[in-house]
Amino acid sequence: MERASEQPDFPLAVRSLETLTEQVGRCQNLPAVDGGLRLAQAFEDMRNDMRDMRNEINRKLDDLDRKVDYLDSRVQDLDQRMIVAERNGAARMENSSAMRADACLAPLLSLETGEEIPDCPSTMDEADALSSREVDRILRQLGVSTAGPVQDRRRRLLLALGVARRAV
Image (cartoon, rainbow, N blue to C red; front, top):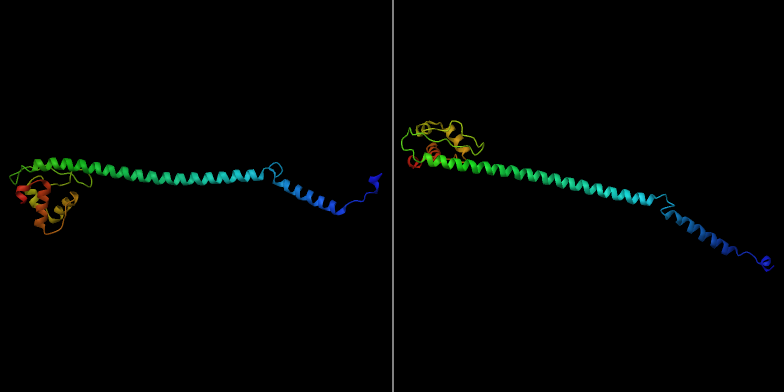
């Protein structure tokens, strides 16, 4: 019967309801209660981070591909220049024995194209008959200076052809 005489503690009931409300409100933080929204957001964040990393890796790979292509092109250019230099060296040695103005000269290859220089003089007479413009064109293809008067450029052309005796 003692229980019947006890009076309710309303302030305690209010505090208990406040505590219960606060604790029930925190249930939304539980993954099972929030419908996995936080977990889904974490996965979305990870997916975005991975996409960003993939994009950055792809950009870096593209840059690397461009650099490798550039290096490959440079190596091919060097290879061509070495082949041209080697073949032109052999032609110059052959041409160095030319004594007469009508002696045959071996043609040289262009550093620009790797091909035989078009209208490369086949004799010293032909070299002497070239116009100033033709001399410059051939010198440029051999990577030789085109500066100075035409007689200096002709001399450089004969030296480039390997005809040292006549050029001096």
